[in-house]
Length: 169
Image (cartoon, rainbow, N blue to C red):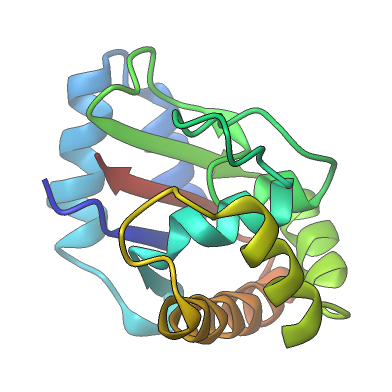
């Protein structure tokens, strides 16, 4: 599995359909086959493998806990990557989390003051030993994707769209 994270800003129709689906398999198929296949760059934001470090930094995930905990941190920062409403019963192979429009607005506002020094301090504290790529180069990679994600959420917040984060593990 690739473990590549992506955020999608959903239309009301996409959100309604996704929530109406009953099984994990149906929801995963809908995200992969409809939302991802028809992806519009304006309403999508890839975070590649940096999503994990971004999540750890924003939630202050303890580095000694190897398994990535998804329900940690404080509102609204904990929503950014693996927070939000859990849409799958079994998240072993795939995660889909929903951030509602009002939460997107709160999150976008909370991300604005974060600078590189803030993220870097948390990277060195919360990502040590989490993966072999842990390094200055990986910190730069994490910062680059964080800025991309922050800009995306800031742009999406006024649209009133909900956002999903998805990743196959």
